[in-house]
Length: 618
Image (cartoon, rainbow, N blue to C red; front, side):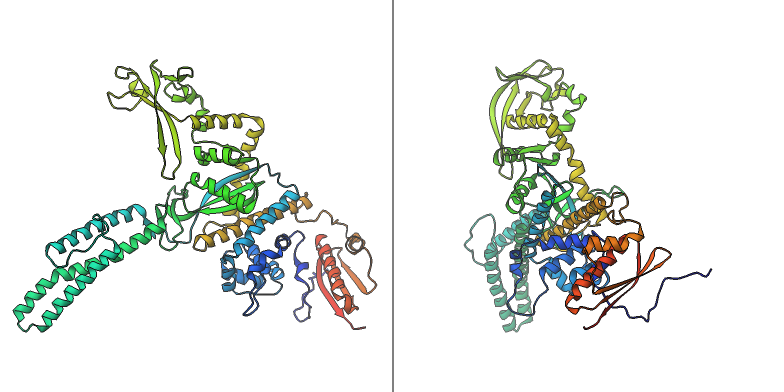
């Protein structure tokens, strides 16, 4: 018996059909399309232009960018190439092919930030409507993502301060020397300690006049020995002028550097908003300082519901501004706010409990250590010391009383004040346990600083985490927020930003996080519709004899009289569908019906060899 091949003929004309029929059912392109279409039309008003060439619709640009990011494509040129190769992108763009410049301009446009915010709001509403999330709690965590900057472009605040101090010292020294040699007259100064830029510029002008006077004398002088003497006198003012001009340029640069730093300790020369942070060790356990951003997200059900980008590396300082942004731009905070020990601080607890009236399920740094038996049995841990509430004193392991002495307030550099009660022992000189109890110098007694508010907050957290309901919510943290970063970095391969500047980075992060959401949501839909085999639709049976009855009963409900359908069966699995549409007024309707037939046949593992569409005028 001779071998048979499937029909393959490059010389036969095949008319194009709607690309939607080539997409699998529940494809991510349909999810992206439905989500973007749910954004209100008012959100696109800022993109309207009254002059110039009509622009691409922002809905289309948003769809193709999201689709590209969901396929781990972050380059503008590669996105442009996908528009010519990918069926998903062709269908979402409806045949348009914007250039990579247009794509890059769109995704960093400041107006896109509002579109992305609306996108997250609509996605969250969809999750709530479908009862995928409960909105009882949000899980907050952060990660560091490398910026689009070279790791050797660092500028350190401490170094700039040192250079600035040396510049002040050298400028004062050279100014005093100029006055001592009576090269320039004394100028009026704002401060005796530092010469301002304006004052340095005034000194430079006077030095330039002095040097010009010397130049004129040299030109007018005819004797070589006299010219040599004048040149010798001109040498120091000329050198001083050069140094003063250098001081002016450096002082301007240092002032600009300090403005860029703000509260940070470093920045990158190629991306001023990026801060040098200690990234996680690589496979050789080499921890490196790299320019990056601290990305904060709020999740529920492993879906990102809110996001923000911060230049400071510590999570403690990002917690309150991140909650402010969630309430202002995304949604109302739920009853429980869950985070790890990196967010546990007196200021953060105070903000959640008293300012927002929510329940913080946030551990503190020593929480795990305090749960261990070794810690609880250590007599030198102050938490284990006996406290007499009636007379307000503590008892050390040697039986000495530490009585209350005075109140002490400590204000950090961010302006938050903590109040301490200071207790002191009566006499620690002859104590045999002194070396185990304190590191104070000989002659000084042991002092104990107790922050009552902090101790109450820690007790509150311990109580909440020991309760069954709240304890179970906190246990979900690791399986809720941590996998999102795994999906982002491992599955989506998003480990480095491709744009520079905080506002542009926020846009790109939003595209990446929404791409992760859409991939997870699409996979969930596909798994629900195909519990046994994800590659097959459970609504489509494997009985090929039921193909036509199922198609017309489930898809259209009737057999159109103007459509002629012919099926050729080969070996029970290969089909050839020929559709002839005679009614031009109903052309789109019959075409859609043919698309449904194609999709239904694909669900049944049916190979469609050729589809002929013949339109005949009546």
